[in-house]
Image 1 (cartoon, each protein chain N blue to C red):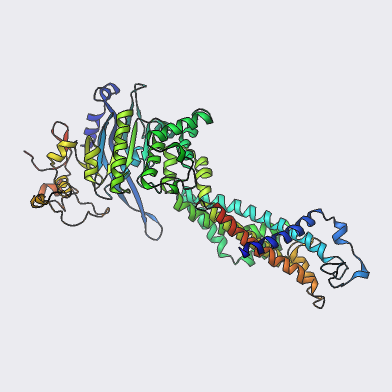
Image 2 (cartoon, rainbow over the protein chains, first blue to last red):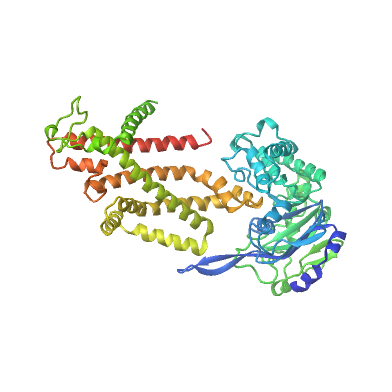
Length: 346
Length: 263
């Protein structure tokens, strides 16, 4: 079934261009081997990402949400080749050169990927080298990609810092002299240095104070509008995702269970898991406490005993026999609203 | 603060001895004179003379120079090998890591003095045997510490970040890994240097180390072993050895503080 899907989704560059799809992820899988026993042999695999499909539309933000350990960070890292995907294709469509490149295949693609895809990391305290001045940190991608001479690089670095709202006078300091929000701005400046078209933001605000979160999110939105960037925004905070995303994909145990336009998903969630997530968002209105809420039973299953059939069935209030026997395939419910569930939605 | 002044005085004293040692010719520190045998320390002979009437001060000074040279060479080679193997093991993981780790464990499971004596016995006594013995007994420690350090560093996000900007392995190592493990590298390096001085001295003291004709601190201390009434023969090189080890450790600590960006 997945193979069928794969061929259905294989498009030519012109088709991608027509739909304005800049990155297409096809049947991406990433399994981590687990070693065990006396002789340290491979015992099992953690199926962190188990065959997922999605497209990134140019200039838009796709929010990727899910609980801890559902594989959302692994997805981001596999796309940017920090982890080598085990199977699947990641098609990057270079609109300026009119070509499609499969960036999951082939070696020596690191520089090509770096020029087109960049990443913003979760922890601004860990993502900056503590022994480098921030100007040097932002300059590094320029050095690696042989951009201009020293003065030109310096000008570019100052420009990048201006873009993210850090004053010129501060740039020759070390990371520990900055606050969390400022550090994350440095991280964004570094990601922007090579003029990438896609930025993968791996929970970029979850380590920040709430007041600072808004500033950083607004900065990202502003940069997106100005530079026409495409974001893959990985997060577990639904209100943050709602604020920044145009489209949202919901992940559960390595699979995408629902993907749709943001307002559609928030207005009309279909998958029981999405519904449960939505009803867990706190609403600052005392009257809303009476609303109907789905409370999930139990914990997320361990990575070694993923349930047969639908992975969510052990916690799903609507689970029936078919959920146990058959893995639900993702299907199109209405315009651009896909869901992987056996339930009939009216 | 008082500690610093003390350290400075010791370093000046050792520095003067060391610099004197550089310029001493063999004639000066090896000239034998029967009339001046077993002279106690005086203004003429600062540290006294030994059984052959040789000036202990000049010999100590040359010995300091020689000992530092041997120990420095040995510990630099050991740090280089240990760091390189630790880096490769920690960064690459998998089968390479397994092989290097096994090698480290095998080396560490020998009692180190036994290992050293075996090498000393097996090789011609030309100074290199001592250096190789020290290197072989020191590098596994350095490799093990480096490997542990690299393992924690390699999954830090800033290392991932520089790999996502397309930085090469060499660049990541020199700009991100080395500066971030310089602390532990310096500390282990300094301790290995101190250890190398002690090993060289104890081997020479047992007459197993550097050839007795070449003055090293161990050889000089050993020279006074049979004539304990002439206490100065062993005492002064001994004091210099003590001061050397003491200041090596203190300097290591100061360098570590200096490299810490938070200071």
